[in-house]
Length: 609
Image 1 (cartoon, rainbow, N blue to C red):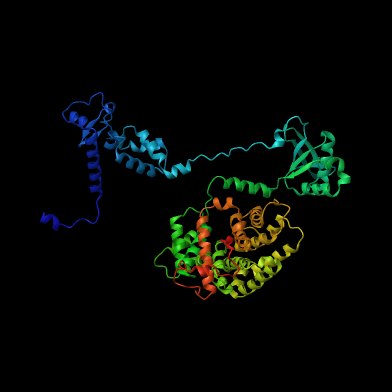
Image 2: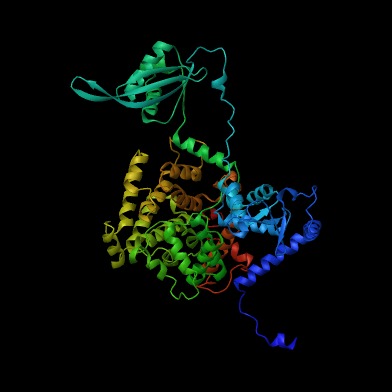
């Protein structure tokens, strides 16, 4: 024993030791499961016919029970000629099949079975493989069947009996078709009318997409098929124009148009309807930028101010815990570098992006709202929003977008949206100062933008506000709807300003916040980010009472957001009363109740969170 104690133990196990241990475990399991078979075979007898391994013609080799058969003279390896027998209820069988399943890249049952029998023979292997596959999370996700939506009840006009055909009609355009007219080729469109009850169709030809062409096609249709009681269409401009003609020119259109009721099923309404369907299916998970915004909130609350080291560490930790929230490849590289304990400068990984130019995306802007909610001083909001965004976006067109977003939320929180023109003028003034430096001008020149790109976009926003009518296409053309901060933050601000008043293209029962979200989605492009930023600005203006309860119930982390908003409100009051410096080291979770009840015009404005 003393000699053994003095003998140094190896630092790690060798391959031979591991293989020997594996065989010993298998011998132990076999002798425990097949004691009678071992006894008879070692005594030179065959196994009984009632044994469930009888058909395998088992034999004992090196103390292991193996499959017999007629391949003993083959040049194949011993493990392939005579696989080791294992019972299906062995724990080692489950472990072995899980290893094989990963080894073959989550292959199917036959693939696993072929690899298994290169060395082992598990009785009832198919059953065990099915059990392993059913417990594999990756396979269940990859092989999951899509959920089929249950169809709703048919509307009344689809099932109303005893009415003539084409009493209730749906209408739409299709085409264009090129036809030859004299020596030129012109476009012609088809106008399809379908009876909502019996699905009969009637087609007219329209020479163009204008209102007059549609009215003429409708006249011909009614002259041929009879009076229409109800007409349904989308929100095409020609259909809306015909509706306005009907309302304003009842005399000229009277006999044909003033008897029917026209229903507009607009693209915005349909899009919001699809969103409501999604909300009804369960909790909607938040994405990468929202996850990082939550990290910003937690860092501000924990440190009672801005701490770039703590915030960077939380970004990296959040990505490590939940990497499947849709992070882009660029930010993933930054977050991996931020997780390194040897990193001294937390801003360096972002500066290394795009060959040293840095990112100018809108991710930093999307998570900028908490800075506006935490600090009463506008200078602190500008400074900390910029520094917080620079952790992942070192290009001035990226972090200045975050500054603009934070300023918009902060001013909205103070009630500035009550005077929209003054609100946009104040933003232009602030951004004139923010962009008045050589770094911003140099970045703008590299990207071939104006010297002060955000100021220039805000002037476009003001011009669009002055127009009596603005189409979605004009907004996209003037402001953009892409993933760059320059092409999304001003767009989000315009969505808020545009939807302060009811709009024809949106349902009348929508409130201001609902109109803002719906209009943001209608612009297309980077809809989730634009809608999120617009929602933060509008939420600060309208308050949490404007958010539909269905939205709150179906959003992941809604309860945490409500709690954190109240704590940010307390931090806001701490800073306004001199209780914090903006870079504090202590938690604000124990702030007094009297501080949270103090008034600065933000008590009910936690909707931005």
